[in-house]
Figure 1 (spheres, rainbow, N blue to C red):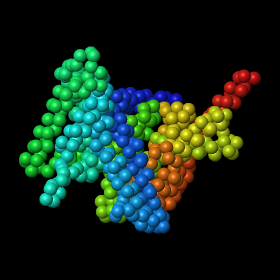
Figure 2 (cartoon, one colour; figure 1 turned 90 degrees about the vertical axis):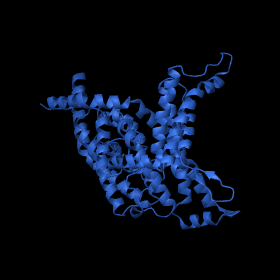
Figure 3 (cartoon, rainbow, N blue to C red; figure 1 turned 60 degrees about the vertical axis):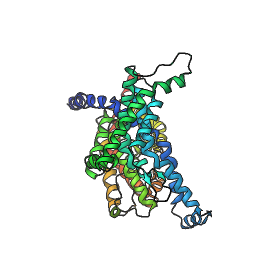
Figure 4 (cartoon, helix red, strand yellow; figure 1 turned 120 degrees about the vertical axis):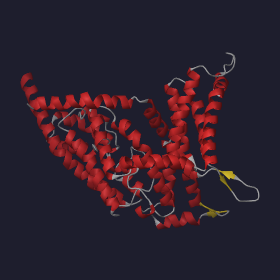
Length: 448
């Protein structure tokens, strides 16, 4: 009877959920967005490192970097400049990566598509002019960074698709075979580049001549509210957390399907918090956000999808108590160390969790619990909001909690949730362990 229930549940998941997940994971625009944002990760981490240095919670340190001055420039301002020059280019570099990935998926020159997209990004972005006798023109950091990410995605996708369309329809300049390939690619990009940049020039002209403002503000106004219902609210985040676990259950990387759609909102929220933290106004009253990329990566999915750090620590507990099956004993060293660094593929497919109906309940409940408790303590001010600092996704919990909130209480809420995650997983893990022991005892009798 249990087998039929399990088969019915698994069959329903495979019939209705698997096809949707597979199509989404192969959808070229989503792949391009994922790859484009991945391109920005080094800049995000570098910028976050200097953000930590500029705001490390030691009064003597912050006073010292503010006192080190040369020609009126403090060391603290140098750190801020590095942060703005790396993390602050999120939208611009993401635009390049998205266009490049989209073009490459159609077997065309991604580098040229990315360069054209960056030029288009500058074309539509309004300039800043000084009021001096000799006017100077500049670009606002806000629109180059997280605030410009929506437009970066739009330009990257449109420009990447148009570029490959021109090339694959052979609407390009052909050079003789004797011309070096790099030069040949540059000339091939002339016609699509002219058309794409001119198109975005028309877009800029429409906004400038009609008094509509600029495309960045319009796109944010159109998309931020509906996407914010998912990416910037507790209810929406719980839905995303559930879907992430559901896709992982059928063997599809949940983050690659669900998170890619909503990640731009989380990154924009992180960027907004970063600006507020730099200004000393990181509070909900000043428009700061609870749901950010670090909130999801470092507080919800500790150990990886499903918050499996609770599972691998539970395995370690059974092994230390000498109550584990031989299978769990062999699995422990392969899962615990990677799990502490948020790498859980060995657990997913070695345990396995994929299509294991015994573990699906804690696999869904643990990250949802983490979402609820972390949201509550941040909303009530017990734990500070994330500062916009981004750490590597492999950063172990407790360390990541401190770095992303600039507070020891960030580590403490992680520790509390890890303890609860272990308790959530443990009863189901004990069931799995009991079944494995029975199977092992039966195998030994058969061998005897």
